[in-house]
Length: 114
Image 1 (cartoon, helix red, strand yellow):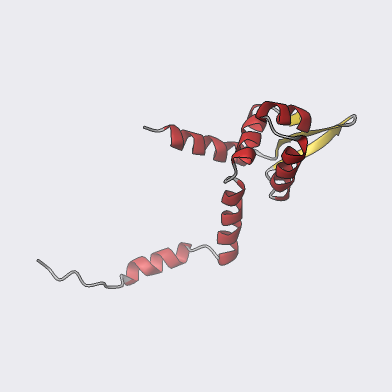
Image 2: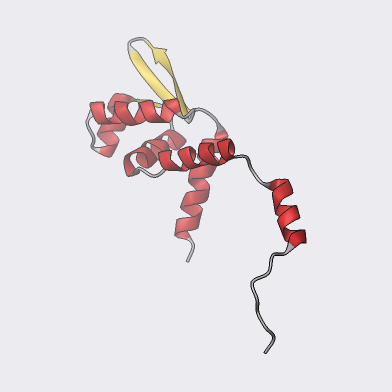
């Protein structure tokens, strides 16, 4: 059997280095996926995929306190995943763009594969 030494593959190294992300991009991606790591935030994103809604509706649907929902919405807002507008005295939340919906849907599709 041929000797299977560990050897560097210069062509592969060069090809990958040309496409390598900078550390700031890796950090931002890590933060993005961290935001998706909490089940409460995932539930909120799921609801906002379906419809924009206020904290009261979200807290009722996921059986969480308004304070807890507000905390998670603040995290989602600070990471540019959700935004809001005011309708009278209510604050209505919605997904900031289709990327968030697609990330959620791809994750769901992945876990549903057999």
